Image (cartoon, rainbow, N blue to C red; front, side):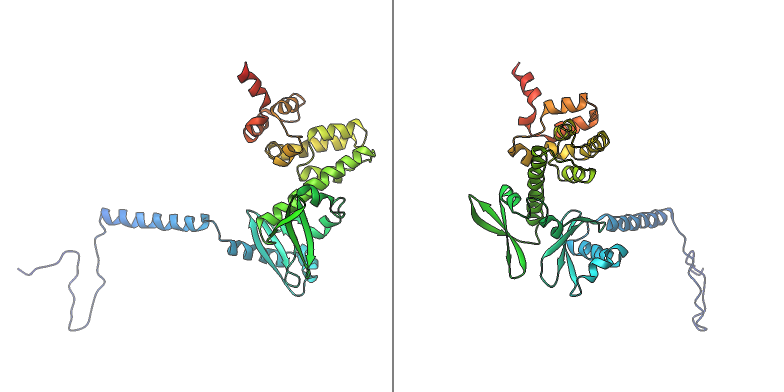
Length: 292
């Protein structure tokens, strides 16, 4: 009897007629194919979820900046070109190729976080007092605004412009400028508009107590006060762990949270978040209970 292979048709070699091979698809093969398909889908998803490199992020945000209508007038001021440098998560430095100075800090949605030229002319930044309180010194050297860390009135080390430290230095400078500006307004009873309150709160130096004091002295309206409460709610958790407020001896303590909660400034969930964020030494109510 001739041997006949299962699942294969006979063919005529002489006439070069080779038919399609019909293979039986077993249950095991189906399982393998399904598994390979699922693995392929998972790898596609993984590729999307993998964190992008700094270079990829810089390139993407730069493309957004260059193609966004709102940025066209700004870009026209830099015919020599610009580059973006990754600073930290969601933060990029906008740098002129002519001077190699940082002109803007932008986020990953190409929105401006702040413009350094605008910051440099703000009260107490222009006269350098905020630099002093933040322990930094800025010097213009060969077109570049270099930043130096200061300790006991001596320049200790330079800060690389395209670094997280440089960005943090400016956050501190803005913070102390706002503190000095706020104190000046209170001292001279300067009426304050919504924009100024918004700026004070944005950089974390302005607390609920400050808002109450401005209202008490009639420097803001009730409407601005109500607006301020909502804005401080956005930064209160960050304020609870802010070392700068602790150094100024104006920290947010556990007892403060109780007052905020009783006045409906914050809800219970926010109070819990704040409690978790604050250093142990700021948990003054818990300390007293432990002593008892």
